[in-house]
Image (cartoon, rainbow, N blue to C red; front, side, top):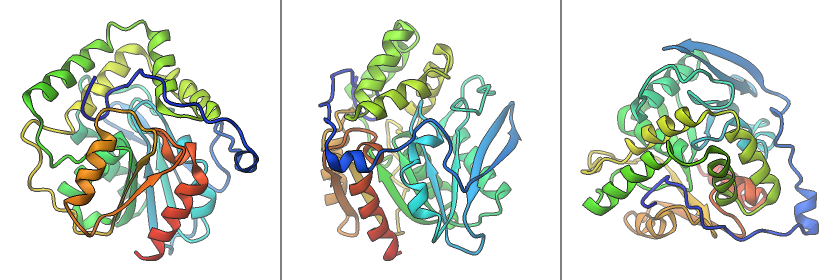
Length: 300
């Protein structure tokens, strides 16, 4: 299963616990303290989102990947709250935001939801931090609402501006249809194992996946497949500060290969490979990711 956010069932390396990791133990089971829970009713679902930090601080929005939820940023929230107005959400069909509400959502539906959440939260412009599907939502927000984006941080994703070959497009469509046929228990376990190198992060991923029915999981990935069009999105111009990251061991689709190519396409891109990390790089190695994120934000 190729190209962008398709699932790679090849096992990624397992990172064994060491003293430094023990010092960065994160509770992935609950929402971090310091955040206020809000709900926006929109197009058949209850969109749950959380905000925290002083309202006069620069805003930063954290957008999770497909089949994950807002808790995947639990290691980032504490280091951001002192200097930022922080927003997280559970995208339509994820976490607490059920039911899916739209029979066949597209990436544009997720962008529309996100912009509505920004408006409901009273946030005009924000730094967008998107992981995987969240990075596709972020890129399409830059494309459609550039005035809402202060800076962009991508974790484990590919450029929507790129075109797809016929073979890549066919493989992508095949992978989407496979979700509806795959035994759901094995599918969830395979996805969780492929998404991270840390066992606690894999356990979190399996928990997040368990909230999504198989039919909805297939429809979510069908929506993700609309993010990268066969002809690409050549009109996209990322003219804001841009931090591009992925995990050293991210085996999802073409992310590692495209990362190098993407970074070389624009000398303004700040490109960092997160060591000892898989697809959910901000969770696998939060120490390294947070250090790079804070360095980048100081320059924005």
